[in-house]
Length: 306
Length: 145
Image (tube, helix red, strand yellow):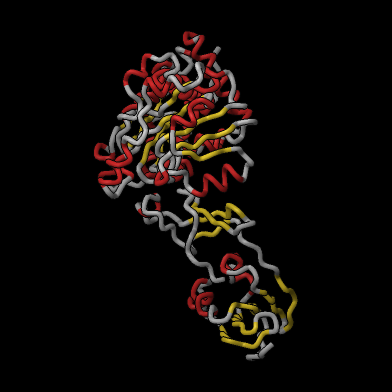
């Protein structure tokens, strides 16, 4: 039985297959509408995450399956002190596959070690969020037609943003990818990403502070939100939160085919006026999130649509 | 080598960095064994200047040597049978260590669920980096080197 804990659990070839499947679902949804008839997805969300949970549930329902679960630890047996291992053993009796979001890092891995059903890590603390990375890769491949030979700008909180770290780790496996890391000094990528991932894989990258300087060279701009909960000091957060605001004037500096992605939710970092720009791909990205999760559920359950 | 009584069957852990024998004694759980253990501190050493030595008289299957490899893989393990050294075992970094060190990441699931084993995996043998199996936090505590 296979689980998904990290985006690197899949080889590049396996990812290709999964993304091909996701694109087939995108173009032929009816073919898959009953692929999971009689199957149940358990969404075990120990911390709230409306978008990820709804995306998983939408994916399962669109495949003909059903969902059960809880949306916060308060509503689960965890509030009574039950361990993750015990919970998953019980849920294994109720469902065919499980998506788990947990504030503690490694909790989904603990579940996978005793589970009788595939476990998908739907986010564990600041550690991994592999289905976001699958979503990002699928969006890029679908809209740019490739994952290699791209200049990718990552902008905002590159220090604490796990989506950024996971995306970099996944993209260094493709040829000719170049990164422009755009952040204030205080929010630059951690050393282990710079040394163990970028330098170790001989990937070309530069670190800059001004978004305007980077924009003309980019094929793709991945914006991130500065997350309040990562700061110990309110003053630092206030100083950082509006450091980058992508607006129409900045978009005029970018290539006509540059895509803008964002894991969402956004706060101020992308002005609403950019939404109308055809290069704004972040809402489409949310749609690809459903296709990616549908393909993942089918793959982990070993189901092939007829 | 300084001789503190001859042992018939057991181990001599040689070339321990001076002053570290007691830590190894505790980490290996030698205090829990009902057998003869001799600790020699600050013995003269051509290789190290000063060194510690531990002699343990026990059946050779009774000791977990992986942990010695984790603490310091430069320690020499002499295996004694019938009063003679029958093998000088080279130590290597163990691929995995269980319940020897604890994950200090407050966000790790092991901080919440106390019944979980603390498991560290050798992530980078070249730089001797161990990471928590669950949260992948790098072990940043001191080994015995």
